[in-house]
Every structure is written in structure tokens, then in C-alpha cells.
Length: 422
Image (cartoon, rainbow, N blue to C red; front, top):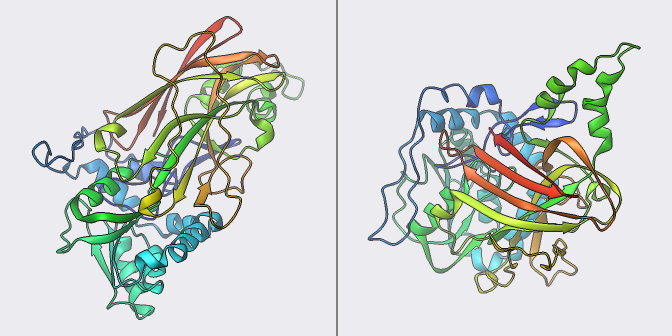
């Protein structure tokens, strides 16, 4: 994510031999220190979000909790923003999207939700925006104001230090831009701030960048990772340390892991877990997402776990709902239901919508992929069916955390894996 607002990103991850464990990207996806973010999490309960955009059903915006304060403080660290800006795939996709939609931005009013250092706001100003409101609840807003001033844009870019839920903008806006995506797309719950900004300020027919997002799931094989973290203990300098295996598995695989894999690790076409249309999605839809999946393995290999990744699309308002993948029903998959065979969307020419992808076969980003490892691999034959369900839900402890409930079965055996993305 670009910065922090009422609902946002999370800190940089602690490292393991295989990648980042748990959540918070230093900003997004684990960019800040988890210790900083967890400073007060054991003391204060999290209040529930508002969930309906109809005026007569709206609840007041959620109060700013101690969890939120810790979150915003973490985003004041420059390292988080350096990591995001140095992700050239991410930053150049946003710059290209702004220039591609210059006709929507020139002479118009823009709000940048979670502006961070202000780089996206400045891109919009360079594209000719009449006015840009750069909103961030973190103290990084102080530096953003200086960056804007240093680039002689203080008359165009107005930095507002506060939550989207709390700051006041005395006009409707034509464009909302935000880099809100976290690990597993929805971790950190910053999309809620985009929804709030949309419902408060966006004109009818306005533009949201990005306009859609799609979260994918696929089974993976990763023998090198398993060997490095687990099989290592079977023979340590000739000493049998197999007694360490249960602890090693728990330590390595209890939480989601943020790592980079390649297309060679993926056993099947991905399944669409959730398609998000930023023009229509509501806050209550973010509380829990469930889907059933059914895969057919393309090869014989050990199944070591499942990978999540996402892509987002930048297109004009008229195209906001062009691609709406059909989701597997929540219940009722029968033996003759088709398996998942939805390839990742590719942009083949410049006339197609711009897509920022975090798929394993695409150039790596700071989001990498989110992996849920099994404690014990399952040997899978070519064409063998892997099926089950997955539920992603906001933690009651802290809505920025994510509970992952994964049920899977293959070869006549069924299992459940529970993880918490902190």
C-alpha cells in the first residue's frame, strides 16, 4: 500500500530461511516491524467496521483503536515506503495508469487514499489534475508535504494528515487513486478506506484506480523449501535430530509465508477466490470470503501447500465490470463439476486495460506470493483431483489481521489447515 489511512497496510516481515512469516509488509504485506505493530494488540479489542453504504443504514465510521495507532506509527518509517517505491513493477504500473487515464485526470479533482510519500499524488499533478487531496493517517504525511513543496506543487497537492474516515474535503472528487493491496490482496484491510472515500466523495461516473482486483489460489509443489526447513533435521552432522521435526514444522509452516515462487511450482490453473469491483464492493463483503475449489493436477509431484496471488486492473469507469470471473459456488460441488481452469489474465496490447500482476510467472513484486504450507506433503499423481474450500475472514482481535481456514482433500484423505495472518 502507498501509505496508511483509516484501514491500511501492515509492517515488514520477520524473515525465515524460506521467506517472510506472517503479515505486514513493512507497509503492505509485511513491510513494517511486527513488533511495532503488535505493541498493543493484547490489550485492546477491535471494533467492527461500518458495512452498508445506504444512507439510512450507515453506521458511524469505526473508532481509531490502539491497533490503528500502532499501525499508523509503523507506516511513519521510511523503510516501508522505500520498499514500495523501489518495487518498479508496482510504481511504474501506477505511473503508466495515471498517464493512460490522463484525459480523466486533467483538470479534475483527485483523492489519493493512503498517499505515503505522495508519489501517486505527484503523478496525478503531473498529469494535469486541478487539485489532489493526499490523505494519510501516518506521520509520513509530514514528509509528503515537504516533498510536494520541493516539487513546486503545493498549490495543487493538498496533504491531509488524518484518516479518510475523519478528514474533511469540501467538494466531490472525480478520481480516487490508491495503492491499497496487501498480501493475499485483502490483508491489512485498507480497501475499506477506499470504499469509505468512494462513498463520501466520488462523483457519479468518477474513476477509481485500480478499478478491479482478483485474488487467485492454486496448489503448489516446493520440495526445496521443504527440504531446507524440515528434512534438514533428519541428519545434522551425522546426528539423527528427527525429534526436532514436529517443532520445525510448526515453526516453519504455522503462519502464512510470503515468498517468491515460479510457475514451475504451480500444479494447476488457479482458482478465482474473489473478484473485487471497487465501484460496487461494500464493507461487509470484506468481513469474510468463502469459496470452494476443485483442481486437477497437471503433473505427478508432492503437494506442499497452496499459493495466493492477485492482480489489479486499471481501466475507465465504463469498463469497470467487463471482467467478472465466475466463482465456484460456496456449496454443492459434485463429482462432475468442472475443475478450475482459469488462466491469469494477460495484457497482449496497449489497447487492453493495464494489469498489475503478482502471479508466479510474472516479474516479481514486493508482494511476492502468500503460501500456506501443509505440515506433511501429499503425493499427487497427474490428473489427480485436489478439492476443498477456503475462508478468509477478518480477525475479531484486529480487523487488519486475517484468519485463513483451508480445507483440502485428495486421494481419499481430507485435512484442515488453520492460519492467522498477523
